[in-house]
Image (cartoon, chains in turn blue, yellow):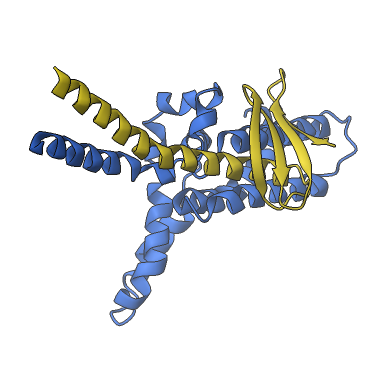
Amino acid sequence: MTRYTAVLILLLTAGCASVAPVPAAAQPPVAATQPAPAKPTATPATPASPPTAPRVAATRATATPPAVAPRIPATTPVAVPTATAAPLDLNALEAQLRATRAIGVFTKISLKNQVDDLMKAFREHYGGKATRTMSDLRRSYDLLIMKVLSLLQDHDQMLASAIVSSREAIWGLLSDQTKFANL
Amino acid sequence: MNRHSAALALSLAVLALVAVPSSAQDEEALKKDLTAVIALQGLPCGQVVTAEEKAETDYAVSCTDGNLYRVYLNPAGRVVVEKRK
């Protein structure tokens, strides 16, 4: 009988250990049915670089003021260049967005649809057959970014800050016809 | 042999009990996902209360505000939200 008790305790503890990490998952049932999320696993190397910049920026923004303030402004000039010179790596951002668990699979596909629509609108604009002006496109772009940020900010702050810091750089690519053509 | 069978049965029963919270969390994650999709389309919903899977990537959804939707992935790869009656 003690054997059964031991097995029971073992199973219970093993069960608890496996259940604990599950809450972070946002889309297990649909994930099996969707082909889209399969790609993130193929690009594990790329997302590693960009999050570091926002991470550094974010942690310094929150952590340094109390610790560094009494020292001298000597440390702040070091932090500023890293925050502003965040390199734009669209592929890495895309890979991170695909991989993040903060957004469900259906939501990711829906966002992708909206990104495609916006890209189409830009193509039409540059092709001269569009009714939407550049300011209209800017409004749509801002709205889309806000949607993404609102989905990310509570669950994946690093990616959210990476997108915030890349926001203007991405717009720079979209709003320049020659750069856009090379995307 | 009987002892082994009993142990196995007990183990399965325990595993089944442990698995229940996991599927409940999956269900909540799905509802959250569908809520976000409906909001992204700019449609009123509040929050998704029930999500019944009609087919693969095809859900019948009811919202806290009483709205009913069908949320599915069409062959073109677009997420479509249709109002139901």
